[in-house]
Amino acid sequence: MKDLIDKIYKHGNKEFLELLDSRIEDNKKTFIITANPETLMYSKTDEEILNMLNDKQNLIVPDGIAVVKAAKILKIDIKERIAGIDICTHLLEYASAHKKKVFLFGSAQNVIDGMKKVIANKYSGIDLLGTENGYVKDKDKVFEKIAKLKPDIVMVALGIPSQEKLIYKHLSKFKHGVFIGVGGSFDVISTVKKRAPKLFIKLNLEWLYRIICEPKRLKRFYNNNVKFILNIKKYK
Ligand code: UDP
Image (cartoon, rainbow, N blue to C red; front, top):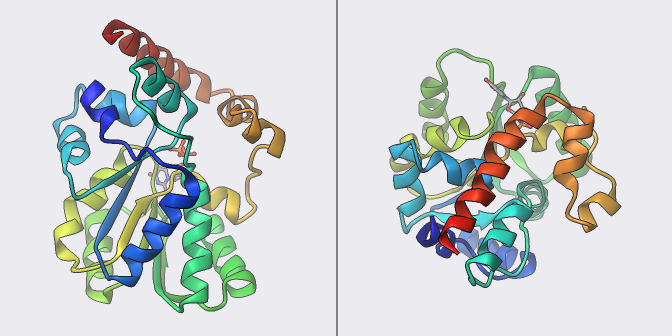
């Protein structure tokens, strides 16, 4: 686990987004893995996830305060949390400003419809190649279609770890592009769901807000976060 945490991006949000912009400008294929305790815990039982995290081509960012805290315990210097939703918003802004080709895959159809409206109103420079909701049966087929469109940015909202696994499975079909699993980001950006109030975000309590709004998340939180921290303490 320690060597995986050591692979995570160590600088802050600003530096990461600048790096991302320059990679898009240089047409460098980039798969961003937003690592939270759940992702890292999967690496213990799922070889595909372990390979994906070990693959030096991929950029892993610390999307979860527990990951930043775990790094501290292990004396690895990770500056701050980089939230997937902030990367998603930045990519939409960047794509609009630079007229980039974008494909959105995942989340419910009403959320996708909301995203289309947000793009038309707020990010109208985007060349939206297409969208597909995340409840279609054959998700591989969707990716084969996406590959033919040669997009600059592909955002996939299917939840952890399906979104990452699907991207990684099909990554070799693409010559360029930014790929990221964005979890519940479309739900929030489309305004179907609310993001945590700023104070929660500032106090690193966004996870708590999500549990308050959706208590069924508690079990998932316990299974991943508590076990993760116990795991890290073993290494100390
Ligand atoms: N989702 C989907 N297809 C599925 C399962 C989930 O499109 O088969 C979507 C779901 O609608 C939601 C997102 O994936 O928009 C997952 O959001 P969640 O908040 O659970 O992700 P997290 O950020 O917690 O990983």
